[in-house]
Image (cartoon, rainbow, N blue to C red; front, side):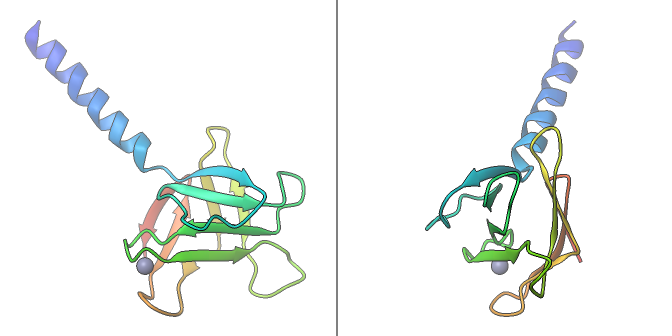
Length: 112
Ligand SMILES: [Zn+2]
C-alpha cells in the first residue's frame, strides 16, 4: 500500500513539474515590462495577433519579441494548443546577447 502511494505521489510530482515548465499563452494589450517565465504573451488578441513576447528560457532575463505578421520579415507562426501551451515555427533564435537557439513546441523548450 505504501509503495502504491509513493508511486502515485512521485508521478504526481513529475506531472506537476512537467506542467509547470510548459510555456502557456496569455493575451495582453501591451508589451509586459517584466515578462514572467513560462508565459508567451500575445498582442493583438486571438483574431489578429501581431506580436509575441516571452522571456528567454536560458535565464539571461532578456525578452524575445517575435513578429507574427507575414507582411514583415522575419515572421513566426504561432499555434496555441487546447491546453493553452504554445508552439512557434520556425525555431527561435536570439541573434544578440546569449544567442539562445531553441524550438518551442507544445509549450516545451528544445535546445538546438
Ligand atoms: Zn538568453
